[in-house]
Image (tube, rainbow, N blue to C red; front, side, top):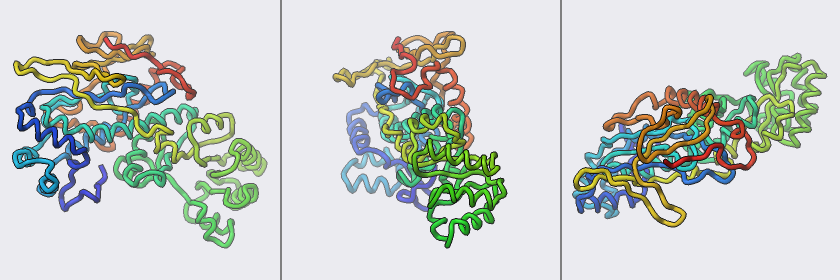
Length: 440
């Protein structure tokens, strides 16, 4: 993860206070009453998909695991908690030695999920596991919402490239996470340089309208950019008059310009006009990229237009209207005093949960998914792909899920998982989940 300046100390970074106070007060009480060491299983799942969505995309696992390795309470954190009277001295001593020693199983990052899919499963003592609720949900809810929206945009683009350009529409570190999630879901590049450095994502970018306005003429701005970046660059042609800008761009490059970018106007008609002009001037290889507040619906509306690539900002970093994936973190089983597993579940109206540690499989027929099977007993069947894999064993994180290597693995897995979905899943119009969830 990128360093977080608010928390950084020389030689030390901690994620321990990226949490809610009630997690610490529960631990404090459990240490006093003797239940803190009771073995427990917690699960993360979404009761439902956002309205009209046909599937979700699980993202953020690699970030969560990275932050788990940084979940430590130093003198500064413990002092803060003492000063606020959140904990007593006994809990302070316990926190000073805190290390997660349990096990975590999860859906692979990039996997698709459905209502009640147990995307993350944490087993450990109550005290060490409950502490991770906010950390897990803050990462998985945001990243999965972005990846789910990005996957819909990839479908709408119909194999044409997309770039994530939303850094100026969200928090500075949220932008890095958003670029990562969008890339896992199939975007090809990001404008965010920190995302490129931290996660190995391809980066892109040329010039904004300010660069054209800086110069005494549009031609002078174009000449400067071409001198710096070469004729393969992309020139922004809608600062003044698009037709005049395209004519200038082709003239300056002898028809070898890489691409033009359009960021305003009635895109279907403007794109058609620009394509006709480029072809008429002999720049048949010059591509057209569009930006201008795109989402999956406007991208789909441009499917018949001669657009070569898209840049998406606000809608992708905000989950295209659904900024959280609706995931919750629930205790589903704990040891009895005799050491036997006891299923537990909420019975609240509209918020009931299903007790017991789950197994999960994707039922396939001829390579196409027909159901999400969530089992409270038994094992995944021979016609089902096992969805839960170990990612932390006895507190040790599997490095295959971390860093740029983990991102590339997640991107590849998403492509395979999405290919298993029935054809209707690709539709971006409102509809029910692409496959049913069977609670067995």
